[in-house]
Amino acid sequence: MSNKFDEIVKKENALLCNTYGRYPLAISKAKDCRLYDLDGNEYYDFLAGIAVCSLGHSREDLAEVMAEQAKKLVHVSNLFYQEPQLELAEKLLSTCNAGKVFFCNSGAEANEGAIKLARKYMCTVKNENRYEIITLEKSFHGRTLSTLTATGQTGPIKDGFSPLPEGFITVPFGNVNALRGAIGKNTAAIMIEMVQGEGGARPLSSDYVNDIVQICKENGILLIVDEIQTGVCRTGRMWAHQHYNITPDIFTSAKALANGLPIGAMLCTDELAKGFTLGSHGTTFGGGAVVSAVAAKVLDIMINEKMAERAWEMGEFAAAEAQKLKAKYPDKIAGTRGLGLLFGIELTFNGTNVWKALLEHKMVCNLTQGTILRLVPPLTITKEDITVFMNVLDTILETVEIESA
Image (tube, rainbow, N blue to C red; front, side):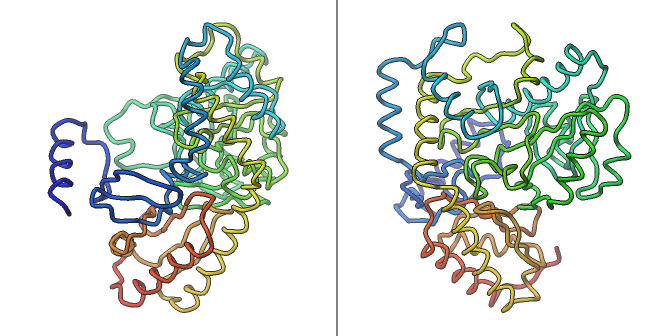
């Protein structure tokens, strides 16, 4: 590491709250599917800012849209009508079966809005005292107090924040009987990710999803789908729930929607939208002119350049290459999972040393749940890039020492 890197680390320790387990890397610039550190070293990016920069880094077409809009209007708040926001809403709603959208600034805010809408709808439209949200084990829905409580994980993420808000129940993943048993008179909604991202690129089975939909219908409760990580072409469809041919009452989006600018969106049916009335929810910055203009351009590119189809093709290629490694190292690779380019390679042992070795070989990816190498690269990634990654992983697995998981 350079002296400049050491200086940055020292400065951060003095200035910022210690909330992030940083990678031992400082990025100075990025382009397409590559990252560059302070010394100009090039890294292959299989993280994309955690499934955010799905169209690659530093795109000139998006920068031009950003600059042009900034010259005209940046912010006036949601006290005013704004054409860029409406243009984005129109394009976004054309991709799905939702009827209305609420714009905010992040995935956590979008999920917070979904939770609030579910409760408000049940209370004011259905006149029922239903407020409980059921989520799945190992899910991740955000870091506000309510979305943190909804998250089906324990440990440091929740330690020290008690008392957490009431009204959330977590059930074991894939267990239909447990889900049915959790339904009560106060249940408002079931909230799921079609593919759990932080949970290790773990997709829900079609049968399980069908059971969830049926349970919602039988009990008159709502279905909320968290598409923060899976949405905007990541899994091979514009929205992951479209793989399952379902229509959620509410679903959420963020991460890739503006390719790096902060935006969140909560989408719902026209019926559910009745739950929100004047003054019941809001945000200062959500759907601002600049971010809306960029997000609208992102959707144009995603559709016109068929990025969903590309994500599926690249995901299938990555899965096939990883299966070759599984056949070669059956004692080290337990399997692969995911949809499209939300892809996981499950190791049979603690993967920290493998992840570190990949980084030393200039391969940036994510390790989740201790054993899952999670790949969420830009959707513009090439087969050649994937092949390079798999060859490096092959070299590492040949010599890595297996630690207990």
